[in-house]
Length: 305
Image 1 (cartoon, rainbow, N blue to C red):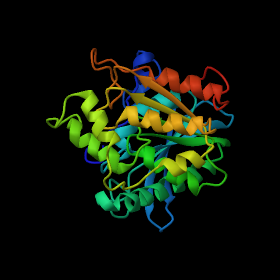
Image 2: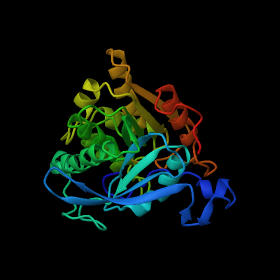
Image 3: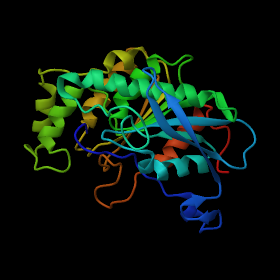
Image 4: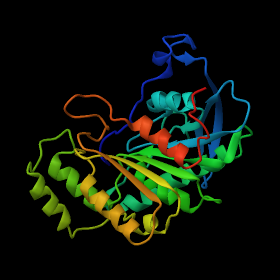
């Protein structure tokens, strides 16, 4: 996950759903109102962002900051997800990573022993984005949270530490609730979905992961145990980048210890992109996300502008 570009699951855009009726042009759907904004991170780095919101909704709406997965990514990689979220009545802030696209700064490329330092730099950017989003006049500041995939599962809990009041929710796709060291071992064993695997027997891989005693890198468990932010985890059992079985075990232990904040949905046939391996179809990520947000009181209705 930390060595390859991983995008968030791209949903079916409203332009397709509406057969073109709600679009001026395929690249500019009418129901989305975009505005460029700047985000100033804690170290003064200015990040280039776009706030997208439902055009015709006059009341304050729930809102999300999308946190990227790994790699030097820009807002362009998130267009499909932004449109799907806005179609559901949610404002979205997406931004170019520092040192990438139109954002200032230097993209942090170190990993390994420096994983936590790298994640904390990126988490400070995410926290600044959420603070910026919360100040928008059309946004309900009590219904603001994070949405992200893959590497974002480590960034989001760190970012939430410094946000006051805390985010209302987190939605994490294909995330790791285990250390960066464990995730790296697993990716090496499986080939990370794009290299020849070192091992092919699932039982042998699980045993190696369970016995791992190497450098932990960044360990998210303390933050996840302490957090009371309602968090939805959407995971693929056939993920070759993140050890879903180990993440589920870690999250189950947190819930068994008395923290009910983490909701876990596992798609048995889904890979890291949350697509079904046997058919190539997308897992029902959007339906599960919006249903959970309604249960949390973030979405007050069936949504859809």
